[in-house]
Image (cartoon, rainbow, N blue to C red; front, top):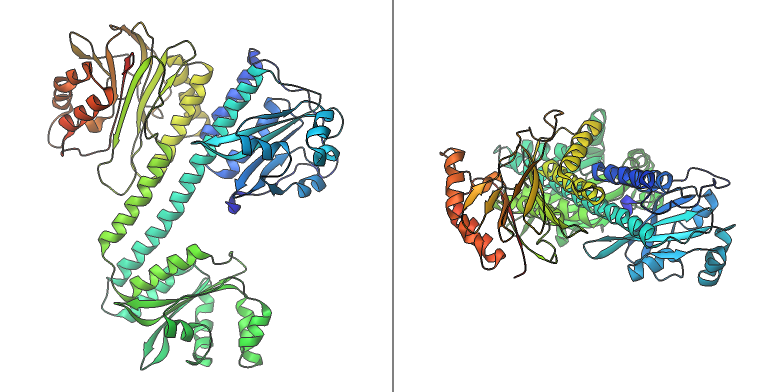
Length: 604
């Protein structure tokens, strides 16, 4: 997580003044400001963007004097960003233990918001902080909870003594939850992107290895592909008559390739060397030098000229891995990073070893496919709920299944209970596949949850989504059905280019049609909702087109088949009924991802 953490300060001296915190959420201006910030979080797609929103924009929205975003790294809290903090104080509090006596650490340990409403209270409860909490300031620390885990804290300091009431604190915790969801989403996306980049690199290397019987040319192509993805400098040596011979050299600066060849020629490998490529060949184990010091260069240099050339390389970190095939070591791959890159770590060792194995023997493409599929599905699981929350007075069931391709799809869904007993339920599909589609899916799902928390009206929510697409220049096309269902059976919904919902009543099964409008991202359009009144015991089914579509037939045929089997949703366990419906309708013929949500009034 350390790569996420950068300390930013806006001032080096005195901290700016701020008003006392916003008051009751009933004040529309405060609500609107914080809702706007929450929408920005939904659109943020990088950690710097999330940090900027969480730190700078929330400070303005709630009239705080200081805002700080802290992320957990094991047993430490590290400051990711802050505003309104003097430079010396920022340095003192750049990181600290989760077990320390301060409100941020306490919020992490307890998972509950921590409020110290006066300077006297800060002095009494957290004496170490007293010197850094001048005047009559109050401190509020909000735990950032993601899937049950506390991943960090949002700390706010207010200029005047302020003890937020339940409404204010609840509204702040809603924002903290949105912040945690954004961080979790971005981290999952970035991790999947890094994994996908590495898998693409390995796929390219495998293709190079299989492209020619001239292994010298093939290894040269692999060395070039390793720069700069893995290193600034790469050399591939193979054993010929028990002597390591350099067959490929690549450098991040093409002009230095000839120079690198000359260095290899002037100072060939000494097979009795205690470290480096000879040692890796003898042991079959990789060798990592996370940090190369000048003393190490002096110790390994053969003469003054060798030392000069070695220093000219400006090595920062080195990694040597075996080139293996069928249990034998055929050679080595040596990688160097200069000051332009960070040090090698265990993840780099693993990746380089995989490259060494692929360079020795053509690796089965099915294994690479399995790796790509695992990465894709891990991202999908990190974003989509495994099951819908238990909602009092409602039965809910969901289903998601992938069609087997390596790229993740863009199907998303959720159901959210509303304070007045109604239920907001939605389902959608981002056009395309891959990590970008999944990231967009996560953004839209988070945005919908944020918007409906302020006003769940379908026209309002979809209208805000349209404006979000226009304001942030989002390019994807997204189909969506968003509905609000009341306990009495009243249903109001908007359909943005998606498959029509299905109502399963005690006497019939029919589709719910609405005012036509294009998908989100197509073009600005007027949104109208449709309303229907169903028997309170009816079941409402939302689904993606993968449930109805089959190759070689028109969609209307698929809709008719779906309607024929929907009576199974009338009674019994909704989870079991929905699973049975999907299995019967889609079977083994599904050509796309399938997502479905069913809701019914009552309890199991």
